[in-house]
Image (cartoon, rainbow, N blue to C red):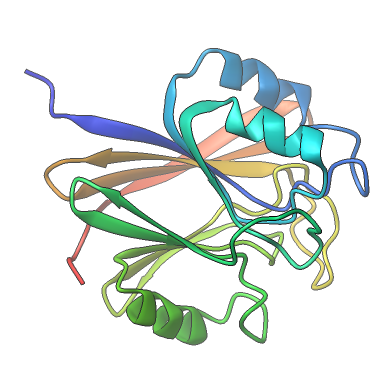
Length: 189
């Protein structure tokens, strides 16, 4: 019997119609073949049609407001999956961008074991003081105020009932999707 799991798509900083035309076709083709239970967008969606597309990718969607969004979106979200609490923020709440110490303090104040943030336009997966930090980078690879990787990227998380998270980063380099991932044990808050 396979362990019960939830498949989560994590993206951020699309900036579509402002800095990019649409999601990379390589990613949209991949999304067609997936059945996401949850879709998370950590802000800078920018336009309503992008929001509609993101919401249509999974059974449930959680989208927070980025500093470039003028849509009616929450500043933060807390999602409960199998008793694991996942926080979602854009990341413009901390300086410098991606400051893990400051993000960890936000995660602790939210009471979450996993914190999804964006704003850096550079992906990272790291653990600090028992908090798993997930930043998917920019799904379109566009420039950000702090630069960024300029490589389109997103993350998939397989979250299992037994407190295990399999986290895989997808990056689009020269028309090819590359992946790298890790499996992390979740610590309760």
